[in-house]
Length: 132
Image 1 (cartoon, rainbow, N blue to C red):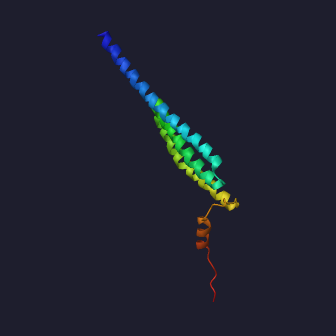
Image 2: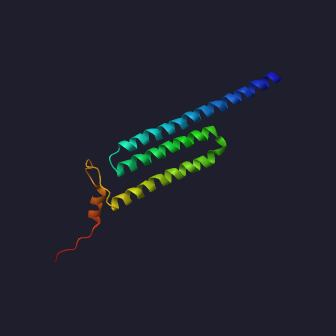
């Protein structure tokens, strides 16, 4: 009877170790995404491209790291899911605000930029006086 209880305990420990291994792999993948993004930041030609790359990569890398932590520490899953939601809501908004601020203080685009859609939309919104 004592043998069977010992076998049951070993099975539970193996499941826990597998969950920790999956969590560690996902967390490592998130760290890898952040590493590649940091290299990409150096390669981008202007502020606007760097903002775009940094936001997407930090959002994905951080979310992957937090998902990995959910597997490692299941008791923290509620808090970690709340953090994931918070990151998904705030990262794009803060990036948008920074990009608009950079645009309005006239930080130049790279020479390879072809279209300035914000300038086009501002022209469409301006009211021109009518000739009588």
